[in-house]
Length: 260
Image 1: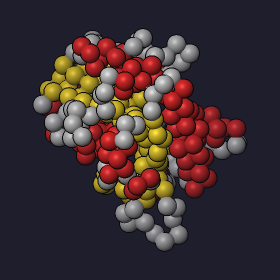
Image 2: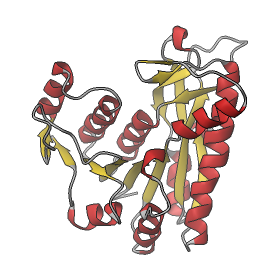
Image 3: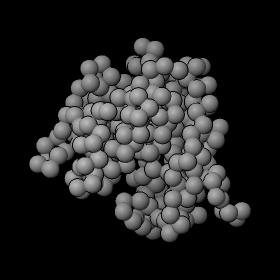
Image 4: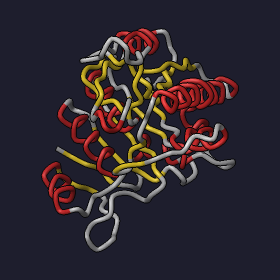
């Protein structure tokens, strides 16, 4: 597949006035091959609260025991994934919701035993994505993935992986033309707080090292750097703006581009 666009959407960019789904359908009808990767951490937290399960975060990542993993899998690969897939379908698009476990798409290992079943991507097997794209579908990917590397015999078969590195690794594996992060900020801010329209690889790495790029922006930028190495254009844009995705694909409007 050529000219694949990988889009990472976060739950914080969705709302009653969100136009992302409309943009996905319109771009698909133009013949553009898209892969959508989604998160949904807020929805997981909400459902954990409903079950009376406390949530603990360390360095922005959720400590994930077996019970938390079960809820995260049900919410991310079930409710959130199917809602996005259904939203594309009812607007006239063609979509298929899958997880990182389907077709062994994402093979992962546990990143830190102290964090529980939080995964790190080891390998991407893109065959299932290629098959869906060739058949004319938008794959909608939940980041719950296969616990395939160094798994003890009594451990779960799944791990929960941050959707940001999943998007970057998928873009690299597909040699995607473009990786777009739809976020709830205007772009990457520099030391002065002003949004930077363009950043080179080395500048991005320096801003991470200095602490200017911090928190949840680090995995997004790291994913962009990985996609760059495979030849993609990588951009982080404000997904709250109407038709942000459409404008990005048509004109590269707004946000921050990270370039090689």
